Image 1 (cartoon, rainbow, N blue to C red):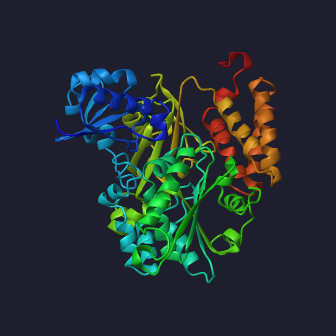
Image 2: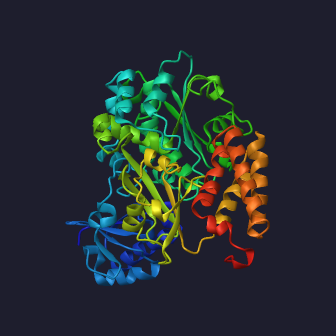
Image 3: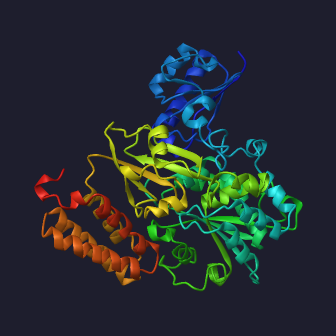
Length: 518
């Protein structure tokens, strides 16, 4: 038997449920049986409910088995899984699994296919094509492609990426910066982590393209402290990319130079806000800056700065490689391209779903997610992180695009979707939003710092069944003050889940304390 390639993910989600042990068991079993295998630690395919997902290369394609436990390995060998044989854990050809086949993998076109730190495999699958195209264009032509694509910031603000790059490119300065916001702190989100762990060269290529477009030679990746493996992969990828001359001085023999450093935050959620992130990068306390001036004019160390999310920068290479029109063809209305929806919470099949804007929330939750993990009916869905609105079942037919979500008083945010079944107490969820702000507020402005504390206290009174009508009215007043008076999106957005709970689940607020579910 010739050498057979077996894939076991190295993504931290897969490792958290035993992928390392499975990989060790497969190698040990092969050695014991005298079978020659090549064990590749690839990135995840994003089907997190099937992790650890083991794949075997066969003449027909890669065959998937999962979720695999170390104790299953001997049985897999006995069944002949190295030839793609049937087994209770088999899912057939990986590419034919409906959950994966029905996606629009554009940004994540390489997700799970390769060893994330193998530059040869990255390049063989289209990596560096975008960078080469960018080097053959003028900065204005690069920006025109990004603008034409309709790419908007994937971090939540949804600002036009081309407009931001154009603003920085037109600034006259001795130094400019590209800052990648990788402080992915929203509950139920993990797409940024997957980029950095499973396809890190893609992010570095996108940052280099942005640098060429605006005239910046230095980039920083501001990484959340919890992402230990992402840091390791990024730093190794920077070294490898520099050796290939994809980064560094005179990229690929051109006149352009670009360098990247990873900087790790200290666990502050508010540093996901771009001005607080820059304060932290400068070694200061991470508190929000007042604007104007815009960061495109006065950003990091007072210099013109592009601040983009991981997914935004990671999408630039495919846009340059295939053209802005190709990317713009995906989506609906003014929401062009694809969104990386991340299914989490009480969901049967959690994972990353990349689809063109326009798919309904209902399709994401039931067709891809398989409904709730408990099997009970969905009651509420939170889209856009811990400060996103709670959306009731009656609105789940809404199109998953920026404008449609906004029309029902929600936010798209970073594409995180957290599902709750019928047992959820929405007053407790509203309280969680206020408590989250109490803990994470930078404290600079009074409406956010004090309003969140008062909001949490009022919700405690409501949970205790005290003076419900007046406390509900008072809670609404506090929310209004926070929205109108807070300096940044932290304070302005915290009332959104509270108000949505009040609007759509008022019966929970009117429920006597003794009738609450513990």
